[in-house]
Length: 139
Image 1 (cartoon, rainbow, N blue to C red):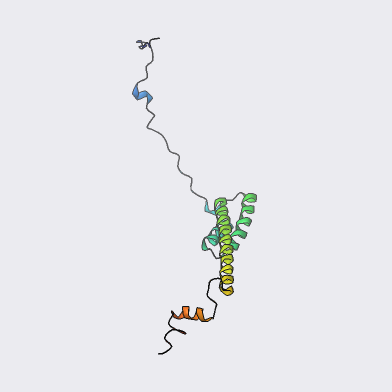
Image 2: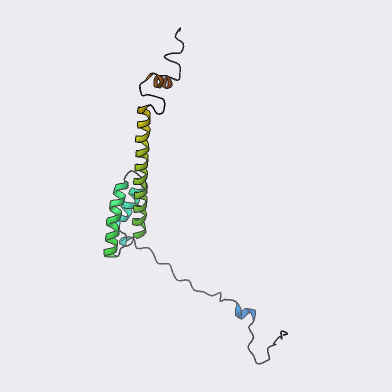
């Protein structure tokens, strides 16, 4: 089976490279401006509180309230509210994890698991830089 080339005749339509190229005169629609008046205020509060890190509980509460308001009224700011919620929950989780680690560290230190008793002689020597109680008695 040999491939045969079919050459166009004078009356047939032939695609030229100019016809295959896309049109260069495209119109760009003007970008709509953001309507700041329809932005949910509690969504902004949620995001700002979550970014601060100290008001994570405020971020979660205002995030849930703003999502309910956005669903009811159709305002803008859903992405801000969801971001505030996620950051707020992550921040609360980190506070809990660090709190648990702090309690574990305190329990180990007070039980002698780390080898240093608070206000014990070893702790005081460690605190003074090993230049205290049992060393250099003859000074």
